[in-house]
Length: 189
Image 1 (cartoon, rainbow, N blue to C red):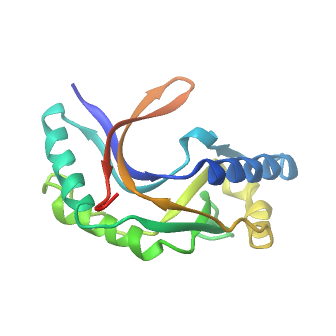
Image 2: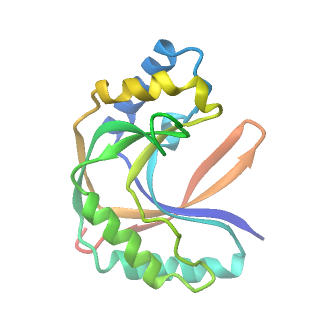
Image 3: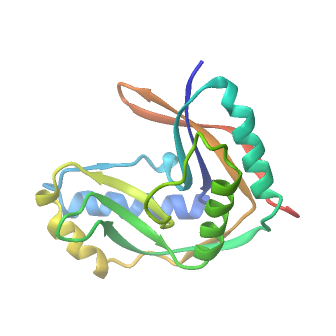
């Protein structure tokens, strides 16, 4: 049986609540922007999206996650600021940035790349830690929203990351649902 999987760090309840407040305010302030906002319970910091995985590959993914976690200590993460990918003139993704913990998240993602089997090749673009708030459906409708982000303070909101999580993403007509299927504590946690 195949599963859609990704590996991530969960955000804290405080960060989730602050992000939900920001998304609600942006939706009110920019009602014509065509953005598919994430549900707050789905917010996370992706380390690696794996896509569709055969059931027989899950064990090797768990091993890669365990090997990665065994070499990384718990660390502080601080979410701060907002932005848009690829830029404010062509926004496709609205995000919250990572100020503290950026280097540690990059290290975790890099170690995962080292330990994952070759059937999961490294991504072509460099890993950029962020928390996705929404996906823009029509860039031209969200340009003003994207420009406004630099003037919308977010955070700082911080917590200690002490585990990485393998999530299953189930696609439903109402949208995707993320379920943690394996939690791996970081070294010394």
